[in-house]
Length: 110
Image 1 (cartoon, rainbow, N blue to C red):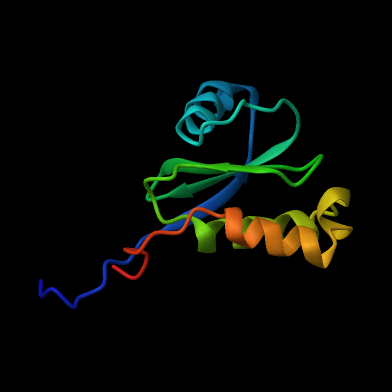
Image 2 (image 1 turned 120 degrees about the vertical axis):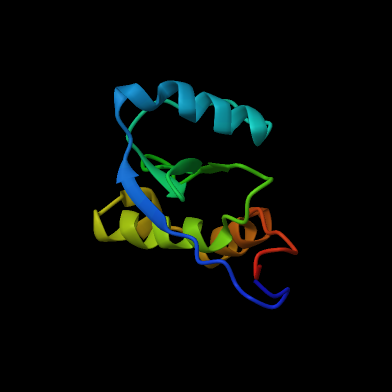
């Protein structure tokens, strides 16, 4: 594989279950946050949970060592499609703040 070749990463989004508590706690600790209880979506890259979007308030915790910005945006789209009230009423200022808080990596294109 050449240095310019891109690796294809498979991502998936699913509803969090009670079995995900430990995963959510681990991701929250990596993000220097506290895990939040309640309905959530889990974002996975290549089968590994790397981001959590909480449906009640739209907050996100993500692994800062993985490029998750595109995945988190897809999770927000999914949450809006599910009718998550917190995401439906986010102001432009809140969306801008979230964009700057989203973990981005200089290696996102690799």
